[in-house]
Figure 1 (spheres, rainbow, N blue to C red):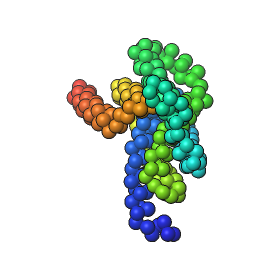
Figure 2: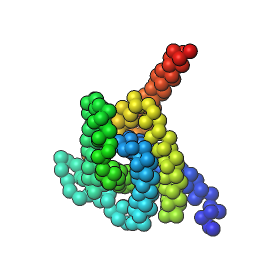
Figure 3: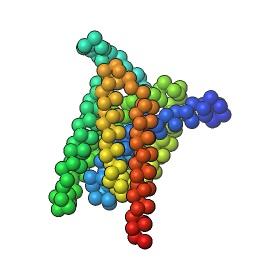
Figure 4: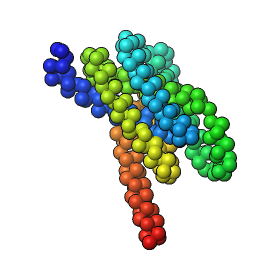
Length: 242
């Protein structure tokens, strides 16, 4: 009750919630892209499981604050830079995102036939998709929790902010996934976004911090342009139908 009556707690809760939602954009885009490799009914189940795991990981990590803080301690030094476990996790996660985005882009340009695509979707391993979501969840969870520790003092506030942020991600990811499925051209933008995020994670791990705002601004502009293209395309089809 003391926490509920403290205005500074509410301010930190709202600020942290917004930050968690912003940091969760990367996770939303990845889940929206990766589940589109599955049939619609399996994709919806994978989305729910992926976000549930994201919530579980964040809450578990919050329970081990001392361990999380220890991730920022130096482990070894190379190339004139001291690497912590956080740096190692970010580099590994960034490399995985770069690989995954590049592989997806390659498949997009391969131009599979409908028969090949149907066979691939039928043989797509549901557990493999969940496994990839778990890997990315863990990477983004570490960065997210370290941010939470720096912005709030009470674990209860951090957990509440994470729960709200995951709830927003749950509803947003469904809309984004459906939009990408209906408009395949936007998938390339999402893959480019993941590629940029992967590069920024690797750079961050090596001590070169790239503000996410620059990446979000660039992708936001690209999404705006693509939205205008989709509106223009829909108008042309409507006029052609008349």
